Image (cartoon, rainbow, N blue to C red; front, side):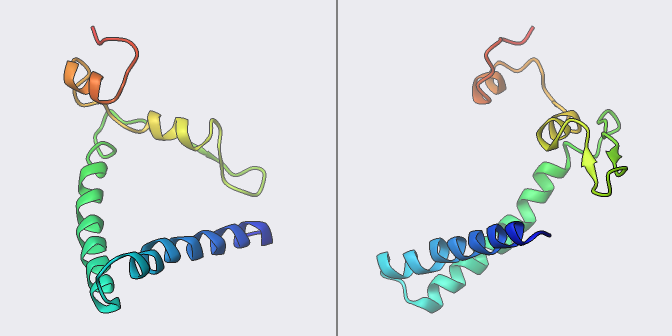
Length: 110
């Protein structure tokens, strides 16, 4: 990790802590202990729910996973992170009008 990456990493952690704890302490009627309790509950719930929801789309046989190029000394994806996420995610219901509207696709499904 370069110095610039470390500064960005540390800065975003500080901003996150201010957002999650300091602002809630200043603008809510909860005391510090209740804010910490609620934060822990939120983290425990979402750390269990989100992996189960999103892992399903990546662990099916039809998903393709791009190869990582390590020839330059740093592991890099040929097309970048976002296209590799799209390539490795399955669409479970391509003919759903509801999901088309929900995900704001510009073209209706056939």
